[in-house]
Length: 491
Ligand SMILES: Cc1ncc(COP(=O)(O)O)c(C=O)c1O
Image (spheres, rainbow, N blue to C red):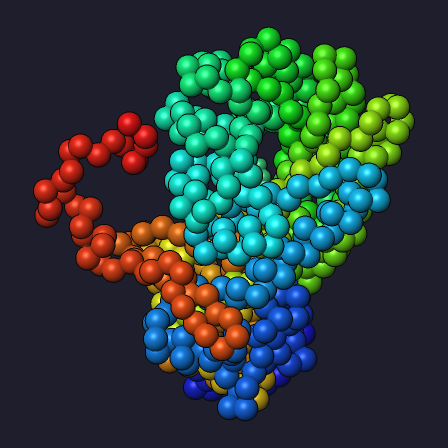
C-alpha cells in the first residue's frame, strides 16, 4: 500500500492513503513500477518503446488508434499461434507417454473469426462450435468438417440438420430428446453420426479450488446414471455411433486436481460402458486458466496436460481397462492473453465512496458493450497507461465505461499513475477471450473492430460496426426482408 500526502487539484484524485485501504481489494498491491507490462498478463510482444508508448506485435498504439480508432480489440497473431501449438504439443507429448493420441479442440466460443480458425487449424488444433453461426464461421474458414465438434444443450433441428449435412466430426449430445432428433436426421440422410454423451460428473472447478458435489443443478448434459441410459439408446440406433463420454467441469482452472476428481468418475462410467462395445475417446472439456491480473498463477499447460492424462491413465489401470484417446477443449488459454483492448480516456473524476473515502473514476470510450465479463461475472482485469510513461505516484482508480449502468466497470480496481488525463490511451490486457464474443450493442453502441497484429503489421480481421449498421436493422427505416428465417437459422 502506498501512503502519501493529499494533493489538491489532482487529475486522478488524492494519493492512496491508509484511509483508502477499504477500497483496495485484498489481492491488489501497489505496483513498484506502474508502467510495467506484467509478463503473464500481456502478450509477449507488448513492450514500451523509446517515447514510453507501447507497441504490440511491433505496432505502435498510436498507429492502431490513428488507423482504427478506439475502443479497439487488438489480437496478437503470434501469441495465439504460440498458445495453440504449445497446448497441442503439451497434450501430444503427455499422450505419447501413455501410448494414446490426444486431440485438442479450440473452443470457438472464446473468440471466433475465420482468421483465428485458420491460425489454430494451422497449429494442429480441431475446432469446437456450439451454434449454427459458429459452425458457419469454421466452415467458411475452410476447416475440415470432420475435425469439428458440435456442443450445446438446445441445438435446433436446423442446426443438427446442417451439422449432419456437412459431415461434422462429432456431436456432443445433451438430452434424450436430442438423441432422437439427431438419429432421425442422420437416418433420413443415410448417415451414421458420431456422438459423445455429455455428463455432469458432479465436479465444479473454479480457479484453484474445486468442489465435488453429489447433486448438480445445471442445464448441461446427463447425470452419471442418465448417461448409461443415453448410451444404451444410442447403441440401439443404427444412425448414431457412440464414441465417448464428455465432461466440462468449469473455467479459469489453475491446476489438474479438479480434472483428477472428474476423471475418476468418468473412467468409472466409461469402464462400465465398455461392456456394450468399444469406446475410443474421452473428452474432458476445457477451462484451463490464464492470468488476468498479476496475482493469477495458473500452472503451465504442460503440467496440466500431464496431470490430466496421468489421472486418466491411473484410473484406467486401476480398472484394468485400455486407456482411450483423450480430447480437450481449451478456449481462453489459446486466445485470452493474445488480446489487448485499447481505450481512450474521456473523463477523470474523484467521488466520495463513503463519508471519508474517495475513489477516482477513469471513464473510457468503451465498457460493458465490448467487455461484459466484469458485469456478468465480477471478472477482474488490469490496465496500463500505454500512450506514455508517467513517473507520478500510482493512485487507486476504477476504470469505467460509457454506458448507462453503474455496473459498467472495465477494471474494478487498479493502480494508475495519478496524472492520467483525457486523451491518454489505456490498454486492458488479457481480453482475447469472451470479450469480442460477448460484445453487444447496449446503448446502440457499434461493436469495435478486431485488428490482428504481427511482425509490425496490423490488419482488420473483423470490421467494426457503424451506427448505420445498427440503423439498417430498424424495420421502421428500411424495407425488412420478410423471407429471412428467424436468426438466420437453416430453412
Ligand atoms: C463445453 C465447453 N468446452 C470448452 C469450453 C472452453 O472453456 P475455456 O475457454 O475456459 O477453456 C467451454 C466454456 O464454456 C465449454 O462450455
